[in-house]
Image 1 (spheres, protein in one colour):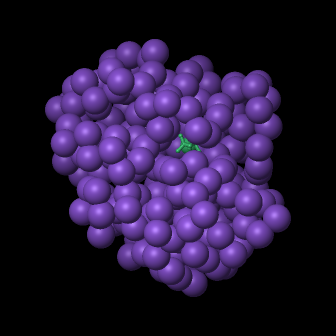
Image 2 (tube, protein in one colour):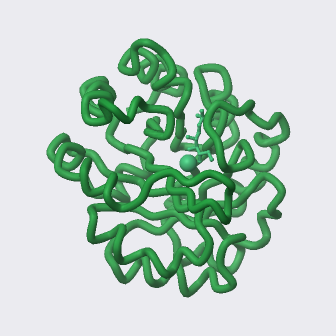
Image 3 (cartoon, helix red, strand yellow):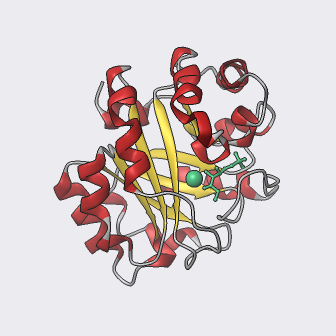
Length: 227
Ligand code: DX5
Ligand code: ZN
C-alpha cells in the first residue's frame, strides 16, 4: 500500500520517541506484528524545540524492516528551516515528511520540495498556531498534523481545547487530506479526536512506556476502530 493510502486510513502511528533505543528494532518489530504500519519519527534540532533527538541515520536504520512489513516511515520534523534537510531524509527512506509552518518563511517551497522528492507532504501546526496559515497550501499537501501538545517532549497531557480546533480544521479540508493528531494520545483521547475528524493517531508514551507495546498499540487501535 502506498504512503498516501496508508495515511488516508484510520491508523495509529507509534512514535519511537518513547521507545527503548537500546533495542529499537525489537520494539518497532513488536508494533509491526501488532498491526502498525505507520512508524512516526520525531526529529528535533535543539532550536525549534529545546531537545535534540534523532536524524536520518535512525530513519535509515529502520527503513528495511518497516518497508519489508508493508509499513512506512512518517518523519515529523521539529527543526528550523526544514527545507534544507528534506533530501537527506528521503534518501534515508522517509515515506512522508511533515514540517512545522512556524519553522520556515516559505511553506509552499518546503511542501513542493517534499512533493518533488516523491514523499507524502505534511504540514504541522502548534497548539497556538491559527489554522488559517494552512488555507492556501491545502491543495498541495497530503496531511495536516495538528499538535495536541506543545512539541518537544513525549508524555505530556493532551490539551483539552484541541478537539474544537481539530473539528474546525476537518471542515476546511477536503476528504482526501489526512488529519493527524500528535501528543497525549491514548485509548481515551484518540476516540475524542476521531469523533471530530482526525484519522491518524500518533502515540508515543502510551505505547512504548507500557511494558507491552504490542498490546498498548492494539488498545488504541481498538478505541478508534483502526485498520
Ligand atoms: C512531541 C512529538 C510526539 C511525541 C508524542 O513533540 O511530536 O510525536 O512522541 O508523545 P506522547 O504520545 O507521549 O504524547
Ligand atoms: Zn511527532
